[in-house]
Amino acid sequence: MTNIKELTVQLCGILHDNYYKNGSTLDYSFGIQETRKYYKVIMVNNQRSVHAFVDKNNGDLYKAASWKAPAKGVRYNLVDDIQKLKVMADWAGGYLYR
Image 1: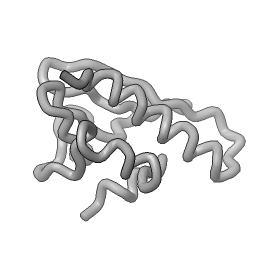
Image 2: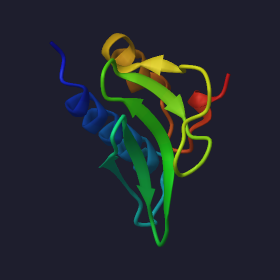
Image 3: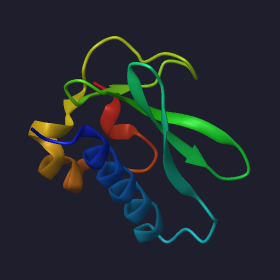
Image 4: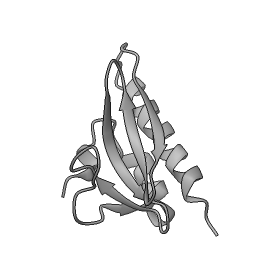
């Protein structure tokens, strides 16, 4: 069985690398906050915001609708699409739009 939390950590690393690859000098990081049903991917600078939600059971990746809830509709699945996300994912979340 695939460890969803490890894949979520890997996604955070992909987003972090993409942020610094684009030449930014600001201190920006990505982390995980665990809730009952999801892992929240959090962007941290001088404030915190939710980048995305990952379903803890199956690895489905959702765009954030608010601090507490994901938007409707699965965008990707970390188990199936992690290689695709290594190429497509950008720190600003444009890959999460349909």
